[in-house]
Length: 188
Image (cartoon, rainbow, N blue to C red; front, side):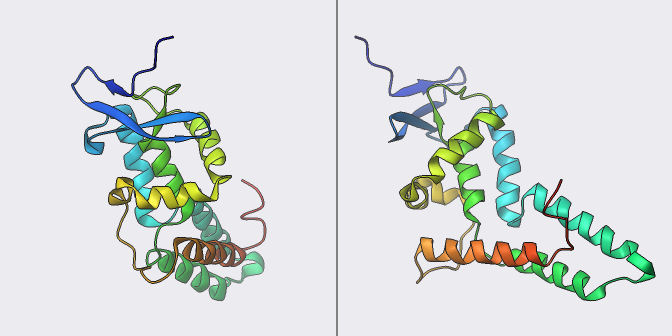
């Protein structure tokens, strides 16, 4: 029986090598992440922007919808207290280290398995891949320990464990969501 190759060599000469195995799947990454094929690179840039801002596009869209709802003023009154609170929450997010979901997303574009094209990014497939990774509490620590960490903005979380930080981040996310007007996070 013939063994599968442990690397991909792309037409442009770039090489993707085996990075790790998880649940029976082999995951690869490019030896030079900044030279990945354009299809993946464009997705990586979009995901990196979310990571850098600490906000997903969905969060920003809901923030805009909430701001418009507040400014439309039900019964002629604008709820300035809520507007100030959600704006402060958005500002606070810029000071936080990346949320776990951002790290999973960036990992999903950086690491690909043998069933994926190294040239493009399938959002639906990668969402399933992320959900599989989330079921393993050690995979997030793995991402934070590998060369992949060099792609992430530097955090100021030294002295606390990654898991402790991510538990705090989840609580902050919940608090921020609760500050929005009713219905913003219950529907699309």
